[in-house]
Image 1 (cartoon, rainbow, N blue to C red):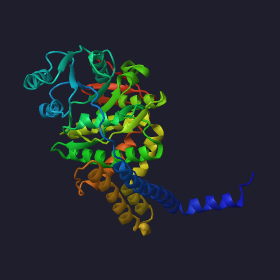
Image 2 (image 1 turned 120 degrees about the vertical axis):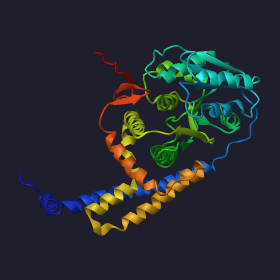
Image 3 (image 1 turned 90 degrees about the horizontal axis):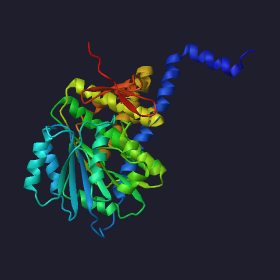
Length: 395
């Protein structure tokens, strides 16, 4: 059967002008990326416009802190949780063994802040693939309160964290709250680049998702939740096989009918310094796990990259070079709004375009491979977001 005249004309144009057609397609994608950057500005403004009510009663809160080794600045990070300006809270810490160097830091702080109820839980070796989830499970079993705040060891907060959480959980429908974080880098270049990506692209995308579809997930190293909500979704045992357990926690809470919000409290996430190899392993772990947690959302991350897209358009059709400064201005405006206004942190304008192109490369790399490195071990990722340890081979 002969093709139609229209189809024949298209094939002829594609054959004679493949570069122009590619430029047209890339231009359309770039237009979508520019619109998405503008949506980030709108989403950030809407987030900032929300104001929580006054606190009516100080509900007791349990803080759960899983620890593993002597992380950078562990002592000052933990100290900020002991110094909460809140009348009723306890802190629980979990380590695998009493030989963990974090134990000395915890016991010293317990002596210094003897008026703050606290407890150290020794869990033993975790039977769960996700060791952090096992630590949280053991701490929740002995926690005294219904409202719990789960926070990683590299988090630093101001004195009003618990006060803000208590205000937000006055909503009886609320089940889970995610605290946005400002990534604080170490001195290495790779750490600074990664922090820029977190403080612009990642939270810009999360804010847009919040605006368009509501919070259908939880993310990050500080999450508040009610014990009864955790129990209703099957407890931490339901999360033990997932690498992105935070995302799955929020997703399951929404499916169970509970509210999930992005908290108004911003924490500091001290990501520390990193070598090139460590940074590559972490970014690949992040990309590959995100692709399995939100496959469609991962593909859509292309629209968060206007600068690389603008360069590709110019490479395909140099006459369209004006799109480059337009993309740069819109990208800068979105990055400033998210990082400066929402997360209240500065941004390195010289490193921003470098991070944009690195992020584009890691986004492409995330489509390939199904293994990750985490705390000195290799794991295999499955298509549903679960993962398992790859046994070490010995001669």
